[in-house]
Length: 280
Image 1 (cartoon, rainbow, N blue to C red):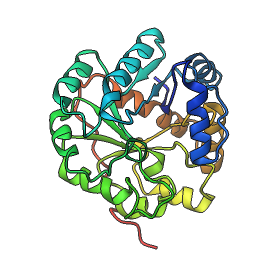
Image 2: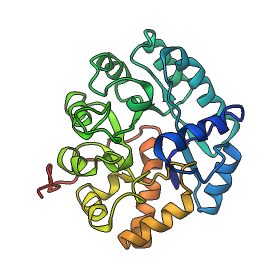
Image 3: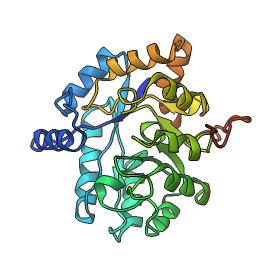
Image 4: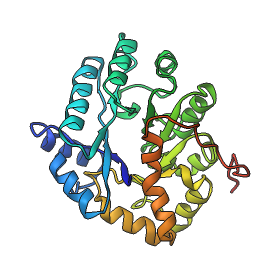
């Protein structure tokens, strides 16, 4: 199954508002409408079988509505898998995780920068313990602030990798949007996945090659960050800039499908010999 592991789709009532907010924060004019129909059309043009759609509850009161929307959009659109959301201030997280798991939701999105908490918030610990290996966690990493001041950063995520061995983690944006050199230092080769979303337009070829070569290829997942970017255009740019063979490109497009399939086999191991820390 060929998947775009990092997309967003919004309720028609709020899509325009969210697109305006994204433009205001990132300075990027979204290419898409943010609606499920537009996403599905673009996935088809890209030759993909589907996508993972993410949502993020900006406060505890939004956890249940956000998760209801995730389950609704997945039920109405067979080509879309939807991750749920959780918030450290939401007290009944165990019951909500059970509800998501019972509904077949395969993962949870965490976006500290938009959700208003730090990735090293100790309140996340009990949530991770309760989740165990039932979910894949997509974690937004990085932004304009220096890593130590930013709610999320590669070093904070590396601590989670080391402290919670059962978690299955994806570090969005090749380990850290605008924090890529820190991602090389703290995340390269660790027991987690990374996705390619919101990276290609912002890094030069040399840095892109470093990011790519310092992580096991089967742990690098294609993500477009639709509606900011178009899946087909991102696939073409990824293949061109890294000079990927057809088989290597297919590996990145199919790895998310294998990760999100019902757990019937052991987790893949990180390749031996991958450096734990990049040297510059």
